[in-house]
Amino acid sequence: MVAYVLRHNERFLIDAKDPEWPHIQPFKWWLLPHGLMGACALLLGPMQFSERLRRRFTKFHRVVGRFYVAGVFVAAPLGFYIQHFEERTGSTRSFSVAAAVDAILWMLTTGIAMAFILNGKVQQHRQWMTRSFAVAIVFLEVRFVAGVTGWEALGEHAIETIVWGCLAFSLLFADVVLQVQELLRTRPTPARAPTAAGASAPSAVLTGD
Image 1 (spheres, rainbow, N blue to C red):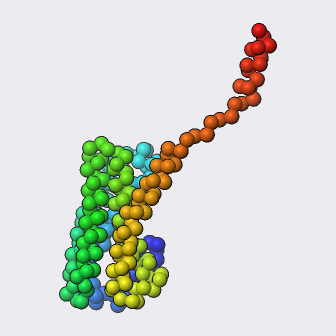
Image 2: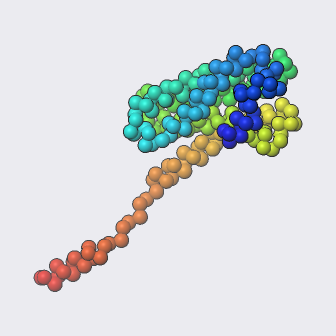
Image 3: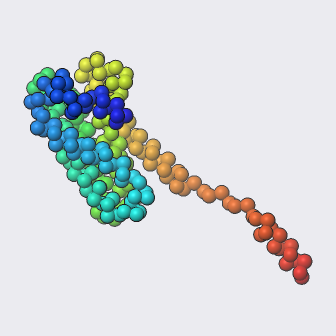
């Protein structure tokens, strides 16, 4: 999905003649920190879910977590501002509302996760980090769905519908993942069958008596 979005939607990053440049020219200096910090969060986020990395390199895990939080609190409001800026070029106010909801959800879930870890609530922190990252990848999901289905050619209203759909399913998907993890963690371990040596031991004792 990442490779598709980079090739299909973000090609202008490596092609100075891409037709997207005239569109982003008015807000390119806002797009730069938004893109860099958003990419930072998207790339570093998956590392936070590695149990092995978390146990072996605790300090590194914490540093990466701080970079993720910083990425969220820079990229999210700037993403909303850029969408609001695009109203000057004909973008709808409803699309700005969708961008605002996306930004608020991303910052809210991340902020709650941060508050829990600062209070030593590791389990709750992991749950809210899962929700935070689920909201983070809405950026990729919208572009992937719009491109693969061809709905991007239907105009801004179609893309806005995809945004709302991905936002709605992001938290649902996160909770499904959390529930599955909980079921796997609490699944009872099957009892071991007695070994041959263990089974023959009582008879040997009885014979000796």
